[in-house]
Image (cartoon, rainbow, N blue to C red):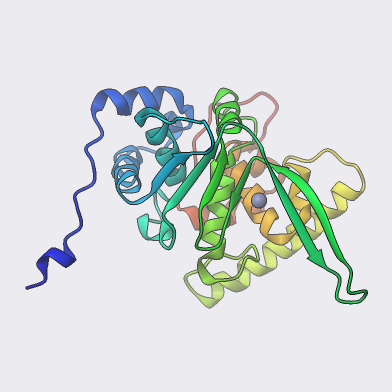
Length: 258
Ligand SMILES: [Zn+2]
């Protein structure tokens, strides 16, 4: 009884042709540890079944675009598992960066300030994932430069799973949470100091904005330039490697000691 309620429709079959075309565009996939590509393909099919991926305004997406976005969104959870993408159902894709209006209230003065910002991506708590297609394509063109917009926004989604956007995703136990807290707060403090001093940094200086951005930027660096992250921030790299359960294995880069 009620079997029809329990059974969801089967994920769509991703044809070999579509899959291999997408793999050719997403060079990070060549760098997955052995055995993970099949897991990622299965996750991507479920993502295509469950999430509505639409273009905003005049942007028309085809099945190939949707497949690439599904793969990129699932890449960070290849080992964590599909359940980490729960609680939201929509991906909205803009042609390029999009303008948002923000307002905030100063509790001391009572003044409300309004401002505008241009964003490449945004992740809402239990709401849509919003992405700029031009920024995704720029990441794919220069895959090892340290930028991975989709991994950044998915990291925000993982962070928000426990309800708080604080740079701490759900962690398996108290010992891990204490270690995470110690490493991330120390790394964040030192990173902000380096940015304030005008030093060159491995990660985008935007990571100094707030602890949640630090986790998101560290994650996007981890999914684009893990070698540079390991060289510049070994403890942070090790923590992310343990959390995500794998790392991309990049070709050797000149001048990088691991
Ligand atoms: Zn962010």
